[in-house]
Length: 97
Image 1 (cartoon, rainbow, N blue to C red):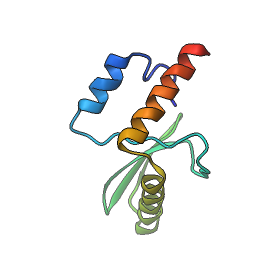
Image 2: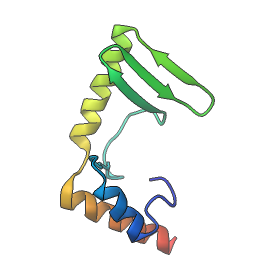
Image 3: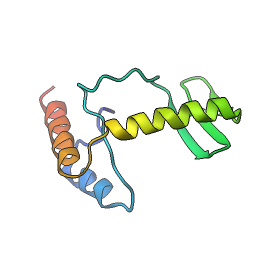
């Protein structure tokens, strides 16, 4: 969870209202993924954002690895009412911490 991301209910509602799918992975999910963010552009390119570098990966084996990682994260994610409850709990935890 990024501190401050869902501090206000208005912001959370605005994010949820976007024409996008918001997913979250609960803290108790057994994840073994890297902390770097990544974007898959198509079956030919993945861009990995790290603290000190940006990697452009176009090797088919690397692209396949990130596609598999995305599939795993997608399967682990919660949606709908469950995602809403997770966001509310995260916001409450930030408020009390």
